[in-house]
Image (cartoon, rainbow over all chains, first blue to last red; front, side):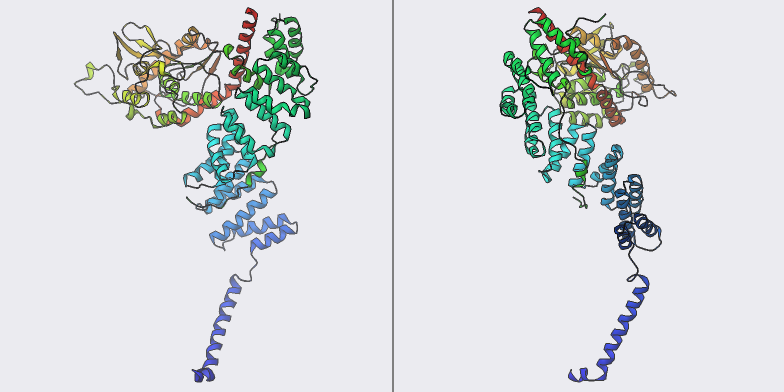
Length: 315
Length: 312
C-alpha cells in the first residue's frame, strides 16, 4: 500500500479525478450553475422597487423554452403573487389558470386559485375550484375555511356550519371563524351552540357588543332572566343598554319594569325604546298616548309599516 | 388524505368588524316567538304539482328550514304532497335531498306495456316502486305523527271530486295525491279510485285558507314550458296535465300572499335527473322572498296582537 502512495501512479490518479471534475463543472457553468435564477432576479428587482422589471423577468422565464415544469410552475406562482401584491387580481388569476393547465396535479395551484376567486368575490368560481379539490380528498384547514366562507357568504348556513366546524377543530381559536359560526348558529336557531361560539370569540368583541349579543341570544332562546343577569352590571357602565334591559322585562311580561327602562335617557336606541313603550301603553289601554308615539315613529322608514298597524288607515 | 401546501391564515384578510347590528324586526321576532306566541300569525306553505319540476320544492323547504322561517302548515298536491310529507315527518333536509338526487324513472316505474295487455291497461307504469319508496321513508306513519301539520289533495277519478287528506295513514294519501293519471295507476282507497290531486287543485291555497292560515305562501312549479317537438307518450301526457294544471291554478295563485316561483324555464316535467338544478332554483327563489315572508309574518302577528288588545 505504501508503495502505491509513494509511486507516481497515485499522483496520476488524483490528476485524472481533478480533470474530470473540472470538466463537469465547466459544462454545468455553461448550462445552469452560474445562470441567474429568474426567481432570484425577480426578487432582487422587487426589493429595489422595480416591480415591472420583476414581472418582465418572470414572464420571460415562464415562456422560455428552457426550464423544467416544476421550475416554470414556481416562476408562474411567483408572478401571480406579484400581481396579487399589485392588487391586479385578474392578472393573478389568469396566471394561476395557466399554471393550473401546466401542472394539474399540483393542488396548491387550485387552492390559491380558489382563494383568489374568493378574495375577488367570484363565489361560484371559488366554489367550483374548492369542490374539485375536495373531490380529490384534500382535507386541509384552508379548504374547510374556503368552502365555509363561500357558503357563509351565500347564506347556505347549514353547509357553511359543517365546514366551519371542521376548520374550528383545527384552529379552535380563530376568532373570525368563531364569530361567523356564532352568527350562523344564531340564525339557524341553535342558540346554545351559538352561545358557546360567542363565548369563545368574546375577546374579539368590545365588551358592550359582546354583552348585547349574549343578551339577545338569551332572549331569542326565550330566557329573559339570563339576559337581565347579563345586562345588570353593563347598564351602569353603558346606560344605552337600558333598552335591552327593558326588552328583556317586556319579554318576561313585567311591563312596569320594562317601561322604567324604556323611559330612560337613551339617544342610541330612542326609537326602538319608544316603539315598545307604545306597545305597553297600547296594551294597557292608554291608546291615545300610544298612537301619538306610533304616529311620530311612522315617519321613520324602518318603523313605518309596523306602526301603521296601530294607526287609523290613511285616506 | 392527500397533503396540500396551504396558507391557513389567508383568511385573515377576510376579517370583518364584529359589531352585529340588530333591527326592529329582530326584536319583534323575539317577541313573536315568546310573549306574543299565542298571537303568532299562522303561515301555510302550499306546494304545487309539476312532476319532476316539483322537486324544486325541496330547495324551498330547505330554505324555510335554514332561514327558520315561520311555518305552521304544509299543504301539497302531487309532487308537492311527496316533498311536503317528507318534510312534515321531520326528516332531515339532507336526507330529502338524497332521495331527490337518487330519483330516476327506472327507480319509480315498472313498465307494464305488452302487446296483449295494451287495451286493458289503466296506466303505463305500475305503482309498486313508488309504493316501495314511500314505505322505505315514511313507513307506517299517520298524519297525527307528523312534526308539522300536513294536508294533501287527490282526485276521485270516478266522480271528479277533490279529496282532502288530513288524517289517517300517510302513504295511501301521498300515493294517491302523486299518481299522475295515465302514467301511474289510480289508487283504490275505500270506495274511491284516486289519482293526482293536480287534476282538480294544482295549488291548494283554498285549503290553506280554510284551515285558517293568516299567510299563504305558494311554491309554484307548474306552468307549462314550450314543448318544441312531440316527445314520448309520457312527455305528451305530462304536458297536457301541466297545461290544464296551469289554467286552473291561476285563480288559486291569486289567493297566495307570496308566490315563490323558481326559474324552471329549461326543465321539463320529466327531468328527474336535474335534481340539483331544481333544488337550487327552489332555494334561490325562496331566499329572494324570505325577507318579504318575514315582514308579512311580523305585520300579521302585530295585527293579531292589536286585535287581542282591542278585545280586552
